[in-house]
Image (cartoon, rainbow, N blue to C red; front, side, top):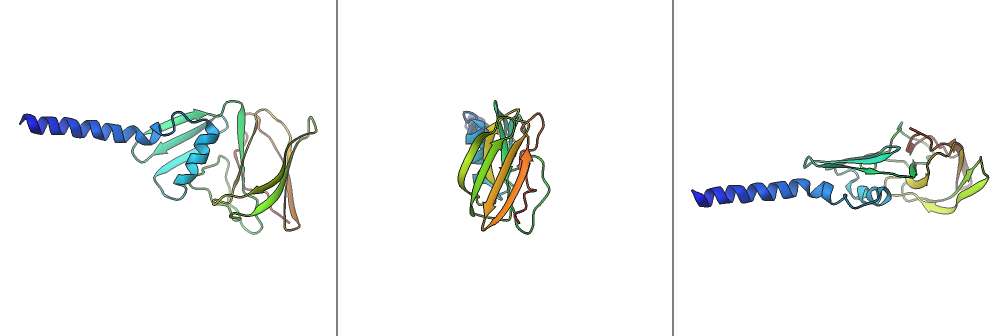
Length: 173
């Protein structure tokens, strides 16, 4: 009977340890690091990870979850497109899928309040069709321009308050 009880106790301890493992693998990460790790869960259905303006929220099939603050950064996860898109407000790197997968394009981001160029150069969309750009919080007017195969899209975005983290409205034409 004692062997059975010990086995039951050991099984319970192992289950609890496994239960917390998914969230524990995120606990020492910054929001950008957690977002990078979130891409490994894309399309697998084993986690739901969402990037809100102030925190990244990760929920796992094992029941564990964790919230990681974005601190002084705001994610602009952008999926430029040519033909089709989807509506979205807060990026879900485990589920959102953009049209243009692994495409290299030019990006320029200018803070229109200060005329400061925050980013300029080539970027490549990820396997989910998005480009993840961490920008400073509390910027009112960031002009984002993408150029791909002589097609361009420009949009003015914000990182103030509850501004979107998922941008799926930049049609290249």
